[in-house]
Image 1 (cartoon, rainbow over the protein chains, first blue to last red):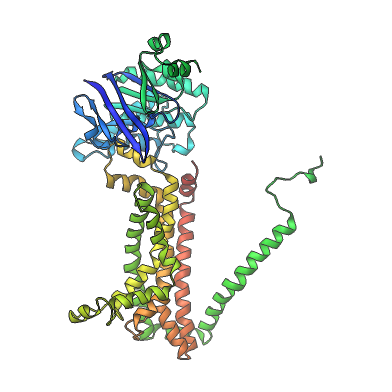
Image 2: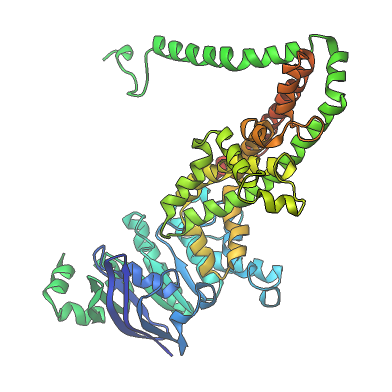
Length: 239
Length: 284
């Protein structure tokens, strides 16, 4: 019952975005993919989410051939850097979306959906904002709604693509702590992409430092800080 | 620094504003409003009665019916084609994409008369399929199917052209989010894409409709001008005018102009009714 990423490669045209990335993480772990832009971290995350297709390699998760499943059956919640909220829907409608699009026999009744939307808004600390539209919210609030929307489907895996990249330092820290709390509460396997090493080390159990489509070093933050394996890692961590 | 010296960098002097404003309004008045007013004046020159008789005359009614029918077939089809084309161009990457965009623009760059002649070449008696079609007693040229085809060709770009920049600008994020939340392709389109493009789509459909009703060149080539059978409103206007029936010609022309004005009015009404929603969609 773990996440096994095995030599995943992906080219965009002639440009190799991923060059055989591999790592193993325990079920319920919090993994951060850390690296400079162009290191392939977002590509790897999008492959995990089913938004991009790997040229070769495999991913097994919870005994499933993960890459053989289309995005909509993976049940992996995805949080985008630019929020990607549905502009024409209220906060409540955004959060309920993943439940409302289920086939009739798997769809919870309306009262249950309403209750779950309220619980999720409490969880992300935005109680009572059900009827607002995304355009009426601040950046930090929007990302909290996006997180609640991703959690509403009770995801098997939570994927976050630089979720706090567009926010200021203070809001970043608050959201980071909240994300960790929510992860520990829900116990969902979480993969978090960032280029900010402080953020990665503060929030994740396991960090994969990426460079040129490969994983340079993978391990617990404390081990990595004590014992950087390559010049690139030690330079990147001290920057 | 005195207040007079300070102005915003985007602010222009008063004389320039007045000059440009007058030029724009004058241009519109002379080239658009004046001719439109003249059409209506000529149409009612013989009084309301003459106008009414000209419009309700049998051949005129047949022309109105035919125009509406051609538009009723061409506009929905072009709406579907336009959405499909814009969707594939905006949301997917594939080889030959630029070529497809050029193809969509083709009807804009080719003279309508030429597009009409293409259909003569393909379906005419001496054309590629002409003989086979005649043998099976299928009439495309000088009949309604040919006029519908010509109208579809000429009005194809309106919906697609309106939607492509809009959908490219909106990106794929919301559709990707919908997919990760378990929505099907059709569900994503109906719940996410369509609500986001509905205003652009409406505008494109209205423009497409206006052009479909007013198309002259291409339809003229394939119609055969059979009074009461293959004459659309614009063709009927020409026919009446060439027969020195000025009141009739201007009456039908006024009716055609009114259809266009109703289209505009409809659009303004919808914009007014849904102003908040429009504003919300523009805010990010």
